[in-house]
Length: 281
Length: 128
Image (cartoon, rainbow over all chains, first blue to last red; front, side):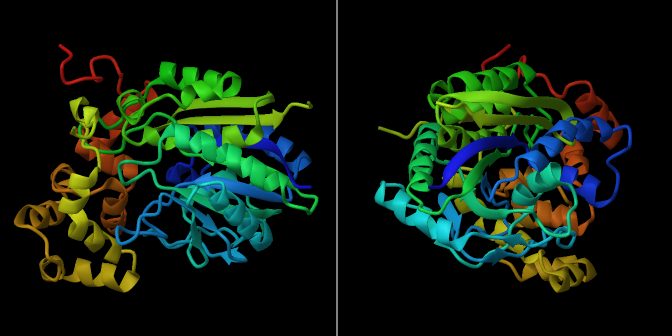
């Protein structure tokens, strides 16, 4: 049986990817960020999954305004790296897990979550920056990755409640897969940040800290937050945090906190990071 | 009963909702065209001619040609689509955001290093 054993949460700031790609991780500005991931990289090397279900949002790379899927799963064998305007990031292509992805799609749709099935698209910084933070710069990613996209750009994104319930459905789907697989689920984006208009640059450390505490201890409570709560308190782009609820619910109620890191600023953003392991029941 | 749009009370913020998306559809799709290198070159070679190929409003055209990102956002642009435009200029999010809030890149970075823009006084248009 396949099992989700750990969840990793991380911001997916494009400038972090640029710092890695340009070898700028040691300078005064960036070194605190990368020091914050040293333990995590070691943990990741010691806890290698077979597959990561990576929950992220596309940033006008795979989709433009012609088609806006609320939830979409990548079912193909491999995914190329998108050119976001500076040329594609110099990172390896992402290898998918078609069998598990199609299994999840079928299970979750029959569980009343109407996923969009995608077979041909490129992945952007939302997916590749967390991979770089956790795995560094390998020639090939050490495990398979199922891209799972959530629309958080066109208002309204799915509600926190819907994301939380979807996470539960993902856990059930994975546990129905016959092959013995160690699966990790990642929730990405956030934390507080606003990239547009005159309130841009907003950071709310107190709110972020409370979000991290509650995500660990009582995540269902967070599913009560409204979209206006997120936008008001965590900025217009802070609403990305609904994606963390998918990953958190997928891990199950009882967890152990392995690592936490929070740093301001990374470009315009409060960078947040957590590693949670499923507690033995 | 009307939809909840309580987010409209948040100061200095334009949420990319249905109304803005409909208003900005062509502006955002124009930005998407700049993901291709040949289009970026053609645009930079003659911006006015390239922009005229798209059914943009006069205000959207002005926003693009003057790189007035606040105007672009008021006219339905979304920041992730607009990023294709400022990436064409080889400008970062950080640099572009500093311009939107009327700061020099240095002053903006200083504000972020000091913890960012405070939430206090920035929650509601009704706040004093």
